[in-house]
Image (cartoon, rainbow, N blue to C red):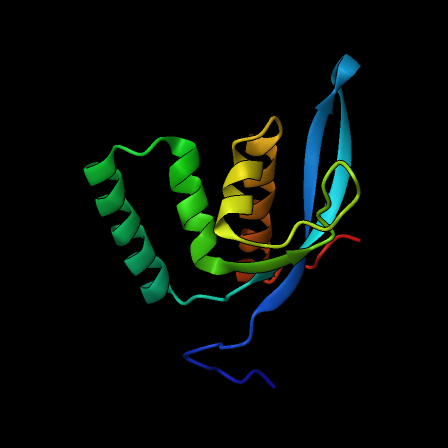
Length: 126
């Protein structure tokens, strides 16, 4: 039975697959777990309007706007480590640093894809 709920207050932990370009046209696929809020259309619209206002006022670049958008629905992660294999704790600053790093666009694309999968009810690929 499907139970319709106007609000879903529990975050969803979901696999995020980053595809990183490698030499020779190959791709290396890595995974981490993201923790996401499930937003309704009204909440998404409010975020879009808020971010549009911020972008116009502050002239934000694409990466900054993407980090702001992601930080509105991503509330945590696991399985992200630094070069010394130490866990990186989730924060907006850590999110920004990764997004502005050498695989930043791949990271943003992967997170956006995961959110779409959650919203559409697409089964996670493991």
